[in-house]
Image (cartoon, rainbow, N blue to C red; front, side):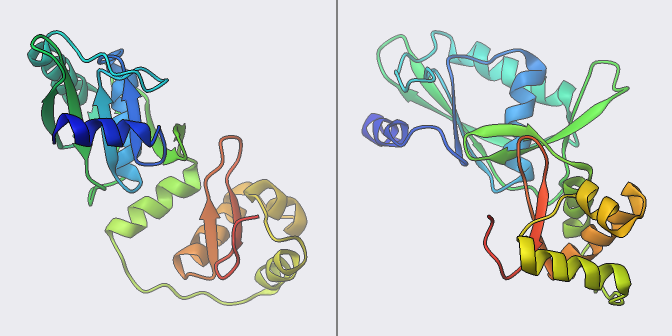
Length: 217
């Protein structure tokens, strides 16, 4: 990538496939950004760029790449492979372009040093947000595809009528509507999404589902 290419890329601003960082942040934070790309559609992380798009570069690209590698090794499970490229912006400064491909091993999780807890993230517009339990189940299903069948019972028919009228529904709303447990509501929605009857939409506060043929509302 040339400096001209970099400048053009930065001018697009942060978005679903592009994130700026002045330098490698705290290990779990950089792991979160990389994992969100890997769990979604992939993207590029630019090290040496401010949030406002100012191009400053980093002084020691080798040290930044080492910090990135250690962060991913210690805080990503499974590990996310990345590609890096340096773009010189002056004699002493470089911007590091970190390329993350959509993973065939998702979901990936951020893990702590003790590995007692782990959290998956996905990319939504210019944010990396925590993945819902339903999204994690769907990611797992993507990597182990198989035919899905289900029966349209009373709950499913009630759900379809609700969506025809109101457009969207959350797990909690469906559980209350059908008078079933949240777990059963989640399982039904995930199954119908895997069957491509429904579509899941990530949201910073709470994911929701729509009919697969409908646009997000």
